[in-house]
Length: 152
Image (cartoon, rainbow, N blue to C red; front, side, top):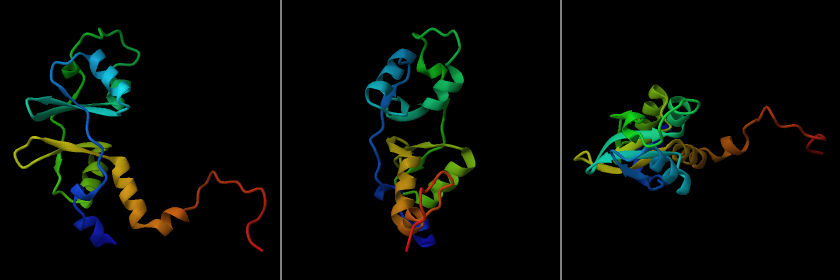
């Protein structure tokens, strides 16, 4: 099992296409696009390079409750120069990066550094659930309450 995690390439995971916008896009346009396309984050690109990421968490921590002009640029609120992985990186490398940084979304780049996709934590969870189906299905939940005992 550990070998599968360290050997499996990110390119083999179920990856949703990223929402990419141009640097300089207004905050209101970026948030509207995220809402319309039901995305939890957006990659900010200059030409074909990922220069930043803006997530729901950024919105909560940097915008909610503050008097800000919605015409301000997304560049003012994005997380600049996010750490990235490639499609050839392994799931193990992704798990390590996400654990160390607290990232839930990791931009993917090709060998030339151009945007190639987005890895989200849900793709990792889906992969692990498929890898360990019995453990996932039989995991004890502290919120489970049974009205009667199970079994004979």
